[in-house]
Length: 405
Image (tube, rainbow, N blue to C red; front, side, top):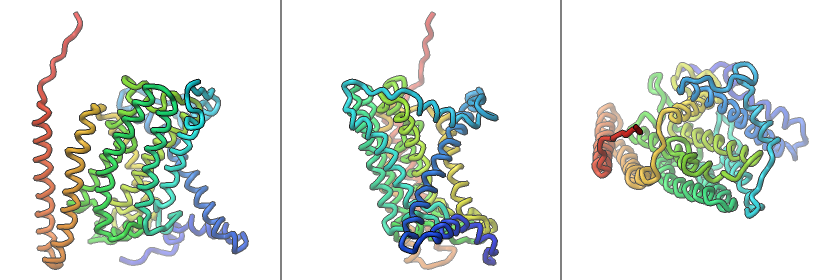
């Protein structure tokens, strides 16, 4: 394949070049700091803008799924609805319960948003477009992400409200339970790459066979890891069908029941930024990051591919929200510990088996066939057995409906 033309390379690095041009206007001593500040401004500007667009797309998408219109009054086709929502949130009265712990009540949404923004610092959104290129980037993301659980419990506990506290306890139990399979599903990509650096994980998936990419999702262990990662990510971000901490019919609004105005808007922002962040890491680990899906399309900018995949992931999350019903709490916890965790551990074994089979049998088409058969059958048979056992234990019986006379 011929190298990309000069205009393609320039377009790919246009934001990096712009950052360097602006930084060069300052004294040499300040240039690294200016470049860092520009990177932070880019993150703080771009992802909240995507959040605003996502709120409109989600409300209009769910409206279509439910045979209604969605936002259509503010601006052309309702596109300015996020601005109206922002003004409303900023001008609404901030009410704090009299018995609440005011300091912790105030800090909870701030800690949530700050922790989520920190996770974007090591996310590669394009070639050479990573704020902090550190070797332990994946470890940094998961370590920072754990603090979101603390902020949610801070919100529920400080509100002095039984619904808020119960919602916070549900959220923490759910997030801790699904964080284990989330971590284990990510480990398979780290094992095969041999690095915790997100950029190196993307580069390891950068080759092509013909026109098809070497993404990890196109292997048995990678596909299983990706599915497990997506399910755990839905639970980590409290998205449907795992939105039990915000169960309106049971908990009013969950851990942020006593929040209003701008503080509530911060929780709303944090939820969507968390969803986009974890989707970005799923793309990095299994879908080639900024890599093109076909070799003939590699001339397009790397950042364009990353954000294109991100919007597809957001659409998938919206589609699930409009499709699947909410689970019960016992179903959710059983699924985490009795299905997700064993399958994640098995996937680690399968990834190691895939690697060692390649070393034992040597390179060649026959080796690839053997690896696919052994690893694929092992995952498929185990999945079927787990599914049959879980369904048998639930003792599902036909539902009977009764109507008032």
